[in-house]
Length: 427
Image 1 (spheres, rainbow, N blue to C red):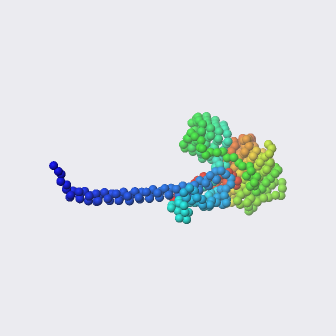
Image 2 (cartoon, rainbow, N blue to C red):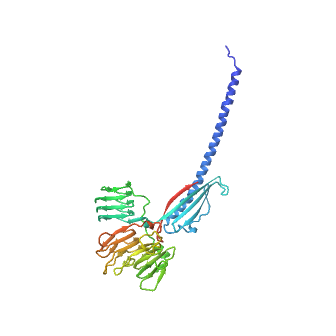
Image 3 (cartoon, one colour):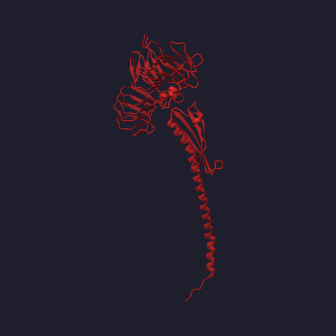
């Protein structure tokens, strides 16, 4: 028995294939082609973005290798357009040295022709340079025990070793508290207004308003000062023991070498005063940005003393709004004391004894604590930052140590600065 074919059915099937399958195939081809082009474009844009990002990484690498130089110098920041594997990378910078800020526009061009790239991307970023010497109210390299009670520490607190708190009513205001070792709290009413980081163990129950992290931030590297930088970049050098009085009046900032006729103007951009193998004593009213650094080749040299025992000799800032003095660097006046062999705070002890107020950045490269001596009924007031505990002698109770938040905005010259990426926008 034979089956007869039906030509009409075959024609219907062919028509259905033409009407359904052919459009489907055409659609798939168009979709695949479009997806391939889209994927290729995405790859090109990704490569262009990576090329732009490489310029920013290159600049950040440069900044992280040198905390002193190359942050604002056009010659150090200049980059020729360079071919990197699949395209070109370049960057344009705009430095704001007064604000310690750098604006970066990085370009990435994918393709072999920089004038006619297949894809291009632009990266806009702002880098703020911040010194740990101004950012932390207290920095201590090593272990420390806080035995005093009824005390408040203002500003960020950073210690690389163990921290033991045996005193009561101790408060860390302005956090965070960063501890590179164990944090042992045996005193009562110990509070931290912010986060706490510790790399060892935590014993006790401090009252922490923020979060508690059982690790030490990997980017915390205790600052070290480059003595050779100050030997090369000083604006005024002293080679024997001297006393410097800062003068804010009548119309511009100067300092006088006491006992001589020498008076030196403080330049607007700031200046570094170097005491080479010398002990220096400083006091007065600072107008401008000043860094006083010392070096020593013998154990008796390289000390910086604030104040004098025989006369009232505070270290303050000039307030241009009132024409008087202030304890804040808000108006662009600031000072850093970078001593190679100790810092001493000396209040007036001769009759009548007086309080001592000392403003600035106090960074002692020596091993000893910062010493403070004064009248038994008088007080010590410190406004700024410090890197050592302060050992008191003679001063009565009620001493104050306050962090100056404006030092980050108006830092003295010649401090090591780390780059902080503030904004990052790709388009």
